[in-house]
Amino acid sequence: MIDTPPAVELHVHVEGTLEPELITELAARNGIALPYRDIEDLRARYAFHDLADFLALYYANMAVLRTADDFAAMTRAYLRRAAAGGVRHVELFVDPQAHLVRGVPLAAVVDGVAGALADDAPGLGITTGLIACFLRDRPPAEAVDVLRALLAADAPLLGIGLDSAEVGHPPGGFAEVFALAAEAGLHRVAHAGEEGPAAYVTEALDVLGVERIDHGIRSLDDPELVDRLVRDAVPLTVCPLSNVRLRCTPDLRDHPLATMLHRGLRVSVHSDDPAYFGGYVDDNHRAVAAALGLTRDDQARLAHHAVDAAFVSAERAAELH
Ligand code: ES4
Ligand code: ZN
Picture 1 (cartoon, rainbow, N blue to C red):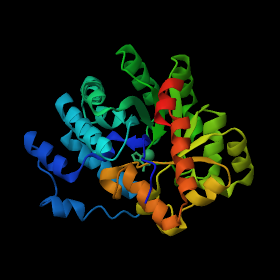
Picture 2: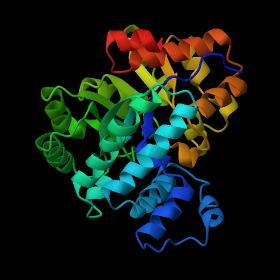
Picture 3: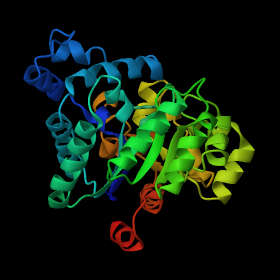
Picture 4: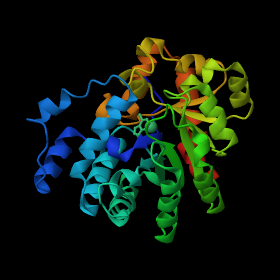
């Protein structure tokens, strides 16, 4: 059992916290007919072959999110679950384009999610930040337009990220939106080396100037890259249950986390899409500690890495350590 609570969650997609019960509740509220008989039938579809297979269901289920209230309800439910699992700081991903393409106004997304963070997190003792991710399987010019709209609307953003289908969509194409974010003083992260090659991790660092890599498990394929990540202390936000469910790794007992940790990489443990992958950040910590036989020292280092990787003040980091 772990004795260090999982205080810091840095890799969680708010839309990936949409639990089946809330999906059916929001569908009823919005008069949306779901293509499932019941919650059990929906849950039966949570066996994924790969990232694309998961993303199809993840985007389809977003149909129930229409109003700012819907986004707020999802965010509030997540915050309550996170607090119960010991989370005290969360940097939450949101996918604005996934909603804009469905005709949902940007304000509904931002007001709903950011409003719930502002209203509910302080009472739960959680500090928060919002990271808008751009979809790498959509045109880079669209990402630029959406970031400009977010900046024009004064959206309370901590940073930007890059997610969705990775293979065939290298990070380099998104140089412009990342440069614009840097100019605007935003933090920058990107998913890389989840299903895609180690070269995408290198490219995200070199071309996008990211401060953290989300996943990065494929980095181990490139020893020179590993040396660089160790030398530069680049944080990698690893999501073990996600990697198993999306078959990036065959079994939790084969997960590269322990190898990465012992190689000196700044890995930390997170949940990705907890409603879909069988667990929140505390569940990921427990599962990986048991499957990989992590020592207390290993677990303490993972927790420390998460605090060090967070975009927080030195004062807040000291509280979280
Ligand atoms: C995601 Cl697991 C994963 N990978 C890439 N993009 C995503 N968006 C939501 N979950
Ligand atoms: Zn992710």
